[in-house]
Amino acid sequence: MNMSYFTIVHIMVILVIFLLSMLLLVLSLKIERKLFWSLFFTNILVSTTLCVFLMLVLDKYTKKGILENVTSQRILRNESIVFKGKVRNVGKFTISSCTLSVKLINQPLNKDSLSGEAVFKPSGLSFFSWFLKDDDKDEKPNTVEYKFSVAQNLEKQKSVDFTVNMPYPPYFKNGMNITKLSCY
Image (cartoon, rainbow, N blue to C red; front, side, top):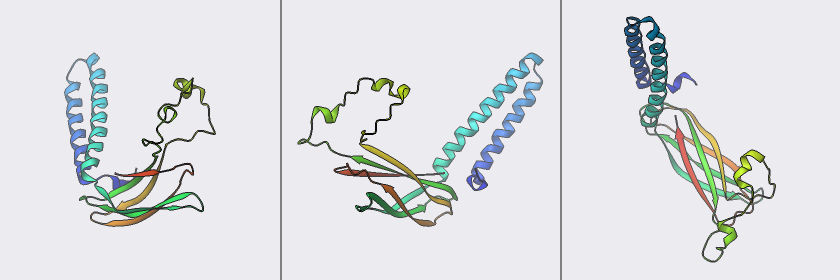
């Protein structure tokens, strides 16, 4: 994790948690010796958990990025799809990193092609598939997801263009694209 991740708000929250932790440590020193170690470890556990939780909450409200002008173009000659667009930092702090998640969903289900096999695919031991690790080469998943890093150290109120390329499954009939941006 680089230092551009921390904003002044992050640093203030960490400082307050540290000061509260030190205060509790001093107070626990004045208690019986056999209770000190349990209070000490509880203090560390609570402080660390609170710090991690608050960092995640602060990221949600201080680091805001949006997608603009996202277009997709399917390239038939190499069975891929290209996404182009722009990431804009609309927050008041620098964003360390933005990740674009692209989910392609095949939509074979309509009232004409609806059959029992399309809704439910019996597979005998599918409940234990995590244990058996059976790699089925003929399996054609209806959902494919890829993640791409599209921005690094994006300053406030700035934007950056991106282009990402991913394989497009040739068996998809009528695909739908879902894009999601997550920044921290």
